[in-house]
Structures are given as C-alpha cells and as structure tokens.
Image 1 (cartoon, rainbow, N blue to C red):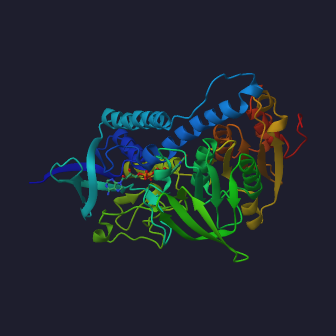
Image 2: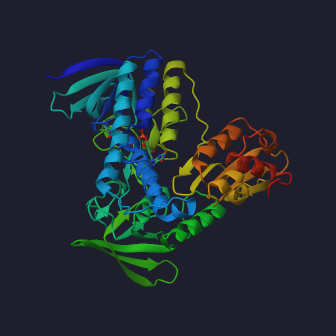
Length: 472
Ligand code: FAD
C-alpha cells in the first residue's frame, strides 16, 4: 500500500550538495523533493564533518590560549582550569542541532518536500523512499533526479574500525575523554584538524603519513612551515612511514609501522587510533546498478560537464562524483546543476575552489601552487609577506605564518594564493575573488586595505610580486 508523489525534481541526499540544490530548484519554481536517510539534514558536513570539527577546534583553541597564553596577555587566572568534555561535546551538539534544524526550516520555507528515508532507484524516473520512521514506502516519480549521496571514510585494509578505540573522523569527534595517546593514520586536513583538537586538550599525538609531506595538496613551502609550527605545538610526525598493523587489545591499540625507505619496523601503543586516509563515494543501497549508472575505479559516479549521467535527466553532484571533496564545492554544483535543469546552462569554476585547514594557524589556499606551475611550465613570480611584520598580528601576539602570492611573470595576473596564518580561512576569499576577476597583483596592491588588519599582509604580499613591500 505504497503512496506515490510526482515531482519536477527529486534530490537524493540532504547534505550541502543536495539541500542547496533542492532549495535552488524550488526557488526556480520546480516542484522538488529531498530525500535524506540520516534523520537530520546537512549531510556529513553539518552532522559529522565541517561543523562539529570546527566547534571542537574553536573551543579547544580557546582552552589552549587560556592555559598557555593568558598570563602573557595580562590575564591572571586563580583557580583550576579544566576541560569538561561532556560540556564541550554539548556545545558542539548545540551548534550542529541549530544548523541542521535551520536547514529543515529553509526547505519548508522554500516549499521543498522533505522525505526522511532511504532513496533507491526503481527505474529511471522512480525513486523508492524507505522510511526511517516506520512509515510505508513511498514511490516518487520525477522528470529530473539528482544524486547527492556524498561520501564515507575510506577504510584501511586490515584495520577494523569499532568507533571506540579504532575510530574514523566520526568517532574522533565523539570521544568522551581525552586520550592519553592518540595515533593518527593520515596527515591530511581531517587528520591534522583532529590532531590539533586532542593535542590542545592534552593528548600526546603521533601523525603517521605514508608520503614525505603533510597536508595533501598544499604548496610544499606552506606544508613544511605548517609541519614545523604544528610540531612546535607538540604534534609528533612520522612521515614516509606506512602502517602495517593496527589491532585493538583491550583498552589500547597496538600499531606496527614501517619506514618506507629503510624498512625499519617500529611498534607503537595508543589509546585511540584514528584512521584518516581519505573518503570514498557513497552509493550503498542506491540501486544505481539497476539503471546502469557508471562508476569509475574509485567508485565515483561518472558524469559529463553538465553533471549528467548516461540518463541525461539523472544528475550527480558533490562528494559522490569527481572533484574536491569539499562542502562549498558540493554547494556550487548544487546551484549550477539546478540552473542546468531550469535554464540549460550553469557554471562552476573548478580552478577557484579554496581549501582551508582550520588548525592554528589556519592554512588556506586557492588556485595553483608552485609545484603545479612548474609542472605546467608557467613562468611566475613569488610575493611573500610574513605576519611578523603585520601590525595587527603583532598586536594580537599571533605572528606565525605568511601570505604568498604566485603571479604570472609577465602580466602579474594572480595564479595562486597561499596563506598560513591567523584568519587565513577568511582572508582566502579575497584571493578567490582576485582569481575570478582575473586581477593582477597590482590591482590588489593598489586597493586600499583597512589598518590595522591582517589583510594588509595580503596586500603587501601582492605588492611583493612586482615591487618592494613597505613594512618588511
Ligand atoms: P554529504 O554531506 O556526505 O551528504 C550526503 C547525504 O546523503 C548524507 O547525509 C547521507 O545520509 C545521505 N544519503 C546517502 N545515501 C542516501 C540515500 N540512498 N537516500 C537518502 N539519503 C542518502 N568540507 C569543507 O568544505 N570544509 C570543512 O571544514 C570540512 N571539514 C570536514 C571535516 C570532517 C571530519 C569531514 C569528515 C569532512 C569535512 N568536510 C569539510 C567535507 C564535507 O563534509 C563534504 O565535502 C560535504 O559534506 C559533501 O557534501 P555532499 O552533499 O556531497 O555529501
């Protein structure tokens, strides 16, 4: 006794890709449904990704500042300072709940029908929704169907995640006590953000990375500086090292690692082992096979430049298809795909998608890095400005890092911006704007920036690509 619903568009997945897409479709006057199986909207990002991690990062940073810097900033604290993990987690949950509830309200406000259930293909125009609330199945038919089912942590062969002692990022966000020893496989953004959180709260953290550098995708100069600064904060790094074993033994985890070059084997002990080696597309239970949707060797659903599968009315956006696994990339695709459906055209500029690591200092970049420009044989100039010479950073006693511009050697057109420093994640937006508008570094250097702000370092680094900076 299943019911049916007829829609202009059905969206499977309510993460940043899916919910933004659904709202845009409704705003374009298409009758739209959004199916989400998690029980809350916002996807990985709001529930177990961007938002909870940033809550823990922000509050652990505050704690670290109070315990390590208060005195030098003229604040004497008399009495105990303690972390209350239960309350720290409650503060995180409050942010998550507020935001996921907000998305639900936005869907309602825009007239999107929200189905709490698991979507799977019946045929090319029909999606079955299996309720997570014990209701009858519903069949939705639609002229357009968009898959936005996201991603899940990539498992490490031979290491079993129990989300207690051996955890993925999801478990690492939920720890109920500060582990004495935390080992992390993977020195990418997620691994390093979690490393920062728990190290600030008192864990002894070891990051094990197969490559010889951390921060996959970072400009190598920035990656080296990042590693140095994080090491100064107490993080231990084992680079060029592969994990050969990770097993839970009671309340601890035994880890065996091997130096890639020398073959030397070492045994480590940890209270918690975090596996953070990346994420993979999620299509479980979607029944994509039934309608012959193609997946590449990494499990990504294959699409053309207009997000279309081999069935042109079935589109794919976000983590479950090609490109950077980032919330704002999924959102941009959500908008562009809706515009394709309504108008037949849309656009995402994949060259201008910023990346941010929310450690302290933050690391942010957009456009090309030096290694990429060299590979492409593009002649470029470098302009750098250190935060130690920036008045606001000095005032805030927060001077680690620099801004680095890469500009075309002849035209000074901005090719890439790389920032390690306080507020890098906010400041990188100006770099994105410069790239979108095809600005030259001179355009930026001649734009008045407020004093005293960190963004003056941005302006001076741009200036440094073709002239002398003033304050350094
Ligand atoms: P998701 O957010 O994964 O959403 C997909 C949704 O679809 C899920 O809620 C899932 O339940 C649902 N679903 C799947 N299959 C079905 C089905 N068959 N029926 C119904 N529903 C289904 N990105 C950033 O940009 N900035 C950050 O700071 C950042 N931090 C992160 C930190 C961590 C710890 C993690 C894990 C990720 C982080 N990311 C960050 C990545 C970001 O979360 C993802 O890139 C983003 O969520 C992708 O959006 P999406 O809509 O493609 O997929």
